[in-house]
Image 1 (cartoon, rainbow, N blue to C red):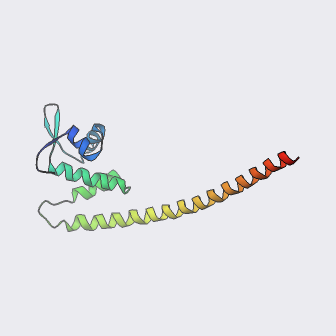
Image 2 (cartoon, helix red, strand yellow):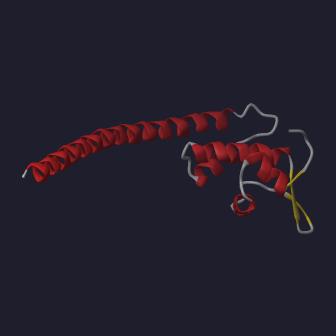
Image 3 (spheres, rainbow, N blue to C red):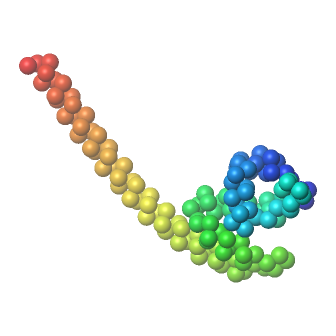
Length: 132
């Protein structure tokens, strides 16, 4: 995407979000579109921020975590602080996701076992009624 400004509709189409989502992020001061009358116009910075917001949400970061990471950005700088903070938050989130994955895997195994037992009991009950 170039340096050109994009309308709310173009942003929605480009990022697969709704106007409501964009207005929500604007209200939370995560993106800062230019206002021209009733129109919102989004620049390259807004697009970059929205990309990071959506990525953070996909990984389960809270909006506050995303805000804090975005605030660390230094235009023209090395952004070492932002990168280090992102790694730290990302590692914490990854540990949470791995714990949830292990719990979910265990629950899936348990549910499969319960379903198998129930199917066996149902088959046995069906056999009892047809033979008796």
